[in-house]
Image 1 (spheres, rainbow, N blue to C red):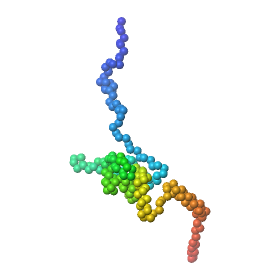
Image 2 (tube, rainbow, N blue to C red; image 1 turned 90 degrees about the vertical axis):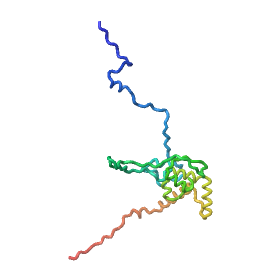
Image 3 (cartoon, one colour; image 1 turned 45 degrees about the horizontal axis):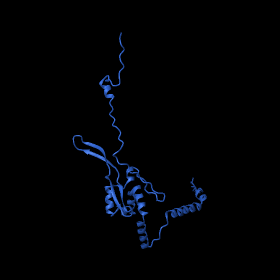
Image 4 (cartoon, rainbow, N blue to C red; image 1 turned 60 degrees about the vertical axis):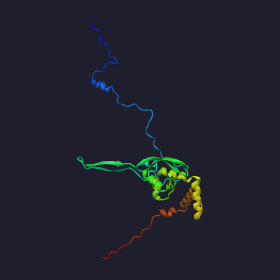
Length: 217
């Protein structure tokens, strides 16, 4: 009497070499930690702070999380002159560093992402506070949302407020109103302009004069 074959166990050798390779897994195990530093988020401005006039970066979003000084990623060609002469597309990223910079107004060291280009401008302005408080349009444009928020924090410190008060008294400039008072007056001014508008006269169609020409027969 013939005995039936025994069932194949899970620990038995595979049928072929291909099946053996298919059973192997090349996926690397996931680590419970990461060596990549966390992405620096763009801080949100408080409601009392004015809005950044130039808005966020349209092309290089990373520039909104630090002081990049207007630097952005650039694209160009890598030209080879050997046997494989030709052009290869490549990109140049800005030289970004994480650095602690002393702020006299805040009384602490600020750990920020800064490019080499912005770092030279900070050293030339003799400090982070002087760099951020500059009122030149080109400087305001290169600050970005991060620099604008840091500028607002520095302007709210007692040391900078006292400095501005001394400058106003020296030049005879009256003290400006608070932001809430200015916004309230601005809304009232706009509302008064809307109420005094003569919409009927503005929407009334204009009368056009038709010039008739007489043709001599």
